[in-house]
Length: 336
Image 1 (tube, rainbow, N blue to C red):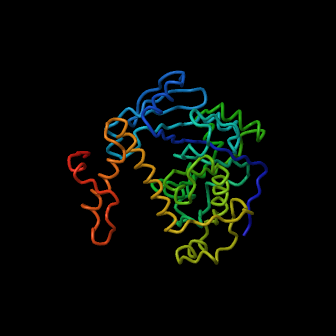
Image 2: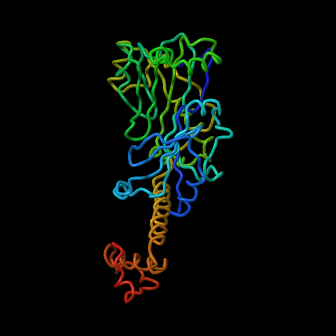
């Protein structure tokens, strides 16, 4: 076992998308009125997109689509500019927040954690790739010099990409990024990128939800990187892999070391509790929006929903009676 040493390296956030949830229609409208976008970019996915100096803002316009997906009608999406994120640094110190100033109000939608290194070793050729977190056939890549190595499963919200950054900069003619990286590395030769893409669905499993937990996210990404190792593509190693005998593989090459405390995945009962809390907040938002558009008192709506649940979905014999079953009033209300 050995850990790769790099002549130089840099880590930063390459992509950041956040959700911000408004609890009422009035708050949503008033907050958006205060913003002064540089212009409208277009419409896509049920959102109208507007450009600001450091980010793009997606505002819901397709309400029918949102109803079908069960989304909050008053969500907005904030997509930050790559250049802006780079100069903020890995900890995102001083990040511009367009609405609330509390980081706990901004929910991760997508985060890409990038680690660029300078090394004489070509990590995209001649190796197998093994992760302690995501078991895949390690020799799927690396035999023909593919542009990008993929580990993980994007459908489940987690992907690691390994690729030749120097090659990408030259092929895309990305002069701006090349200039940035020259200031760090001196030139753009022999640069490789280890880039984690995290989606909300995966981060939630580890109880990482909001921007307030950004240090936890960085620690988590470094921990996952320390679980990735390379093995030489040899007949002996292939035989060991085919027999699922990873422990006997010699000369494992780890991407990096990790000196922190390994995070533990929460138990299922904790995850269920967390999902219920999210459900309650979502339900509250739906009731608030209904109240905004009707004269029916909130207590009447809640009583109606409670009685409907008891009558139609739960066995009444196993549950206590409703505390205030106003059936004579609720029978005349049609909320469907």
